Image (tube, rainbow, N blue to C red; front, side, top):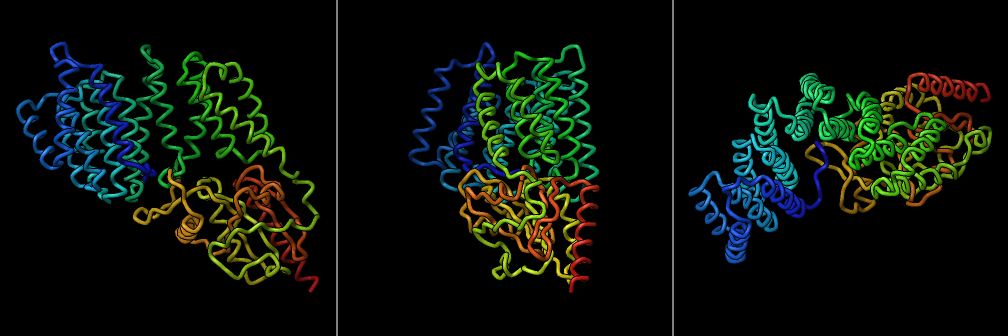
Length: 488
């Protein structure tokens, strides 16, 4: 599943504030004045300070008198937040479930449509602590059912919250080995979003819904592995079209900038020259926009830093035929015996990779095959990665980027579990923070392979995960192995 946020109480408070804005903006003319709501909130807070359980019962009694009151129902967020602070996750989840029931019952209102998404996300935030995946999946199903009702089919408003819930549901289906069902569900909603953006009443909001669904389908979550590459390509073309259609939209500008940043730094690294050209194109397109859009300005600064790092990388041509640079090892993940010196006399494949890198994961079958084929002929693979602040989720058997600071030993454990999950048995080292090893080995993108012969000399450097690249690497390994045999 998607990584859960580090502070459920903090997120819940934010969600409560957003929900209050939505509810306030959509109040009926005969709704109680804001002062009345504030009085209800203050009264509830005073009761919670004295006895939280009693305050929850009091709110329940007030809702029973007026079950359709938006003001009273939204106060469940406040009660849930206090339960979270006291680590009473079951009670907090129950409050969110009751609020979700109210929002689904009144899903004809746009405020409740967005409220459904925010409430489900609040339950998702609690899942890490409570471990109650069943409650989360039930909440997702209820939200999807409400937002997909016949009464809402003519509205565009539910598209954004519906699309996000569908991605969460698809992740559950993938985790349960129902990949085909997940793909069909995702495609059905994507088709609706594409149609909505082709309609006469298409607007910025329908475009943002499509972009954000594609973004959710291209994250590093393992459940996205089967379709990530396809949707990265679609996202690239979609944000470009969005910029052409809505050039003055600050939200579209920011989505375009963030997507291009991911394309440059994570997703499209197979061709370093094309990556450099894309950096220039993005800078040219966003330069004037950055003056008035702070988020775009921040992304361009990050791209400048990335370009400086790339410019400092040693040219690949300068590595070929030269002794391999020294390894910079902070720690070994799955061995304590391997060193650069201990591998002298072997053909060594250095594989620069990361847990979040989809193309890297795509090369794993080749790594397993090559090691099995050549291991007894003087060949070894050494993985090289760095600290990315990832932690291991034991319940879901996956590594996820953490919002909290992850200590190095904890992240090395996550890497070890990740390797075990993918049945990779070769040694893997983690470089120190601020290490220059990647630069010394010409790494401008990953996966990045460096083949070193038995004499410790670099013979091949390749970046990318395509089949043609894999065949070239395999052929070179075989050549180096055979050369070594002849010289013995």
